[in-house]
Length: 162
Image (tube, rainbow, N blue to C red):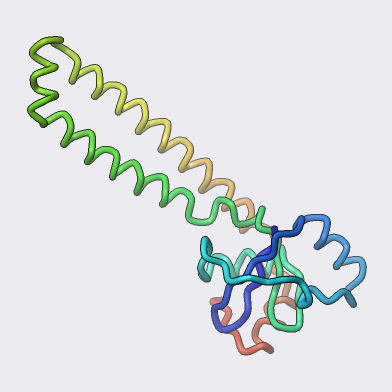
């Protein structure tokens, strides 16, 4: 899958294999990716980090920059995982405080404590995965900026956050 970003902040996508398509475009720069069936991206909004990824891993088009979605998979993932964990922790706390759970605890002493230990294991695993996502994103962003893509973005009227 491909994403296309266009100034000032549009994100569209096309459901074709990203990596091989971009390799072909790099070999044949005359190929016009603008003719692909681009659709508005609902799952990915524009961000400065998306632009930073694009100028490292993308290719220019007449309207913007196209990149393989694979480079964006960890963008925002750590925050999403942590937010989900917070919501889960809140739900679990409410459940443990519920009348039903208190009744279960009286019938099966230690059941709340067992659940709390399990919740802690889940929190640790979630944090581990979140840190891995941050590390993977850092590796994607560690690739060198392609100055010609930054210049292209600016020529199209886009702002690049130095």
